[in-house]
Image (cartoon, rainbow, N blue to C red; front, side, top):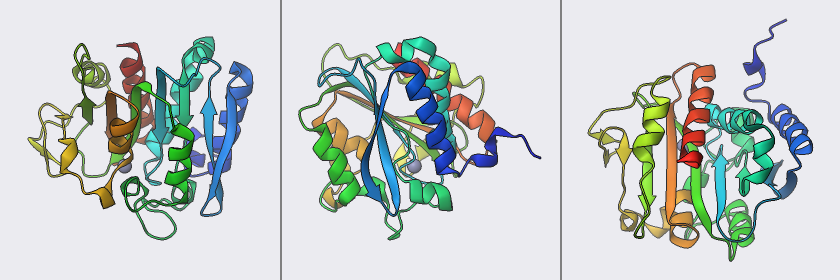
Length: 249
Ligand SMILES: [Zn+2]
C-alpha cells in the first residue's frame, strides 16, 4: 500500500471528505453552489464572514492545478481554531470535473477563468449571484503554471493606504521554491516575480475571475502561482506559506 498523501491528488470526493471533517471541527459551513459537469461545487463560510470586509479565496478553477487545491486545504487545516475567527469565503475547488480528469478546462473544453464577463456559464453566474453586495478586504485566487520557472504572482490594488503585500508573499515562500525572475511571464511584464496587469487590457469575453472580482468586490487581489512541474508536496506547502503571508500582512 502506498501511504503517500498524494495518492488522492485528483480524488474530489476525498478532498470534500477532508473539508467536511475540518468544517465540522472548526464550525465552518460548507454548502453546495451548483452542479457543474456532473459534480457539486461547494463554498465554505466561516462564522466571522459578513457582507463587508471578508476574505475570498478560491482554487482549482483550472482542474490540473492540484497543488493550489491541496495548498488551500492544508492552510485551513494548519490554521487551527483561529480559522473560525477569520472572515472567510472559500471556494475549495471550482472545477471538480477538471480536477478528476487532470484538465485545465471544463467538460465543454472551455477555460472557466475566461468566463466571468460576456461569455458566462452557469457556474460563474451562480457565484456572481452569491457575491452580490459583498465587499472583500482581500481576494486570493490560487493557481499553478506548468511553464513557470518559480513562484510568481499578479497584484491588483487601488486606493490610498492600500499597501502592497506582493514582496512579502514571495519573500516568505521563496525558501521553498525560488521566484520566477523573468522579465516577461505569460506575455506580461514582470519584475522579481510580480506582475501588475493593467485591468483595461482584457476583452470582456475573456474576463478572468480575479479581474471580475477586482472590478466589483475588492481593492486588493492576488493571483498566486506555483510551478506545476515541481513536486506536489512542495507546491502545496508553498501555497500554504503564500496564503498565510497574504492574510497576515
Ligand atoms: Zn490557473
